[in-house]
Image (cartoon, rainbow, N blue to C red; front, side, top):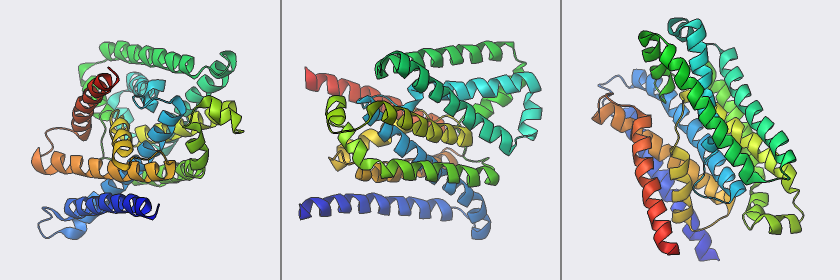
Amino acid sequence: MKKLIQSTVGKLVLIAIIGLIFCGVYLTYNTYGNFAFAWQIRGKKLLAFILVAIATGFSTVSFQTLTQNHFLTPNILGLDSLYVLIQTGLFFVFGGVTMLSQQSLGLFLTTIGLMVVASLFLAKFMLGKSQNDLFLLLMIGLILGTLFSSGSTFLQVLMDPNEYDLLQGKLFASFGNVDSQYLIWAAAIILGISAVLFSLSRTLDVLHLGREQAINLGINLPRLQILLLVLVSGLTGTATALVGPVTFLGFIIANISYQYMGTYKHRTLFVTAVLLGIVFLIGGQFLVEQVFHLNTTLSVIIEFVGGIYFVGKLIYERKRQA
């Protein structure tokens, strides 16, 4: 047991060291003697990396435990598509120049609120009417995601090409234009919800055993499902409203956490996923800024790597079960 703990701690320390090295390199590389100025610019991005890593790590691990499926992410509820629809609708009605020049804290919080309300509607009404059939909820979420995406596409076709170009810049995940006032509120929301999920780690450990076992051990499953969906939606909505959609990040860090740590204790998985998220985000942004010289975006790199990893894991699992 002692060796196992030491092994787990050693693995966490290794990832943490790699993350610290990446942070140091990102903050100091090519500063050209203006470290204070670089720290001011890159420090804000670094905080955004950490917040998104925390939100994505906690939300994805919790959601996969809730659904008992390591291929699903919170995006299947259609939150990313809802974010795109909200932004597209605002750009379509008010115009891109107006939207980019009048970004406000109220709009930021309203976007998060709409995402949480949408997920709460799904959880409260759909779970209640389907006798807690979580898979029906996921199917409805997928259908709504497609509906939101189709609505966004329809509005984008009608938009002026210049407005559409401004909108696309907004929809790509961006860590370079994060407003400091958003960071403060996002930090409060993400850290608060993450603390609640961390306190539920032992309950999630039991839920991982299966729905029937969890019920037999005294867990109020319907109440827990609604609570987890609301918390996960809050994290996903905040991260999406802060930097834009980053679809495959959660899938990558959650599944690597399972394989690397070899445990299903959620306290360990949460910490591992967050550290891996920081490593991937900082490493990806370093490539964007210093290797590709801003000719691509971080979301493109993450989606490319995530897509390859998803297909590879799918083929591996199919061969293993054959």
